[in-house]
Length: 149
Image (cartoon, rainbow, N blue to C red; front, side):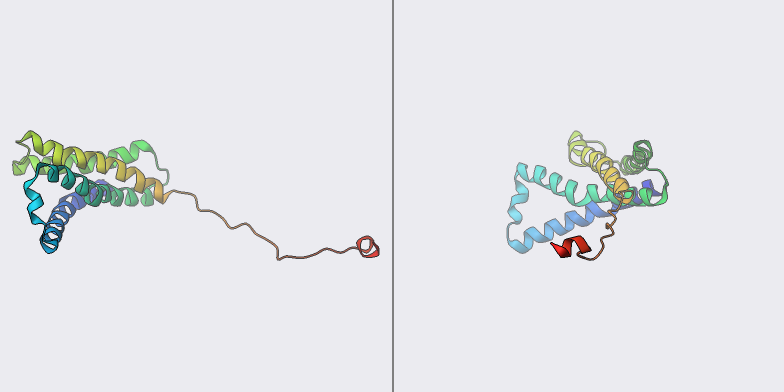
């Protein structure tokens, strides 16, 4: 539940932060006019997917993977579901789920980003570490028969 809460809080904060940073970047570069084009909506959706929704899930998955002894796909799916359901309920109560384009631009990328990010974060914490092989320092064994030859 806490991992899902982390997903929700990050999904609440990161997209608005990334949108404002993207807008400031476009204004700074002097290309703010690209906002008028329809293809910018697709680009903005992909940018928000990679810069906001995947990290949202990743943070929740990191916490879930860190706290659980056994990471399973079901546990990570529940973490993702808690985050996305609470995010969807927030959008519903704010009245933003009225237009069909809002589903394509916000809700579907948030769902997919949280689901993928939670699995990536959860399995990152339980990844086995590579153990350094114990290597003896380089040595040459010389026995008497080898020395006679």
